[in-house]
Image: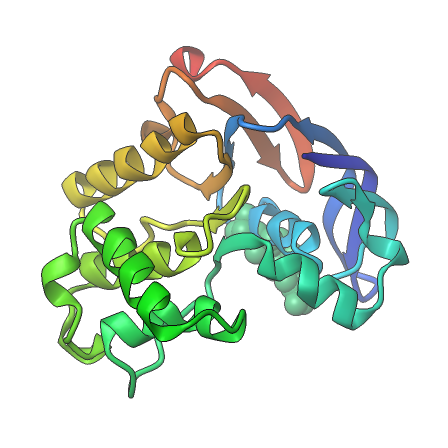
Length: 224
Ligand code: ADP
């Protein structure tokens, strides 16, 4: 599903966000990408969805080498992924239901089908009752659940999530992470970045650790 070969990412001359990163993620795998703040987790996820280009090396997703794709082809590839990135904010003037249905509107699905799929996605994330609310009225946890519902509404084969539990209290973070990792059982491939090793304990998961832009270890979660 994902193959990263000797990838470097530099910002200007000074900052090397990633150094010689090589990794693979197989179809259906659940992988946590962990490491302290500044380790390069966000950078790696942004390379994987083609929002950035590496300074060196190759990134292959869905069997396509991203370096060989133009902007519009990469956008099309992104639409096949579920993305929960730092900038994946909900649009303030749209209801929860409208926000969640956006990827399906873009894909041109009929309204009835959108309504149905959005309902399923919101229920699944435990926020079905919030469908008519505006984002400003949601708690941080609720908003994050809606952002995940939106990422899943297209039934993507690959979900990339960057610190999806970022602003949540520990109990809510744990609940949300369990919800997210349960999705892996459905055959989707999940790559979830978090700086918190305590959230990486799912027995089905593999853990990749970044430190200073280098991939250090690939431990089983019990060992973290
Ligand atoms: P993490 O997600 O693990 O916290 P990041 O990938 O955000 O780490 O950052 C890795 C390093 O790259 C940091 O030193 C960060 O300051 C730097 N960095 C990330 N994005 C940019 C950018 N757009 N311009 C310059 N430096 C950046």
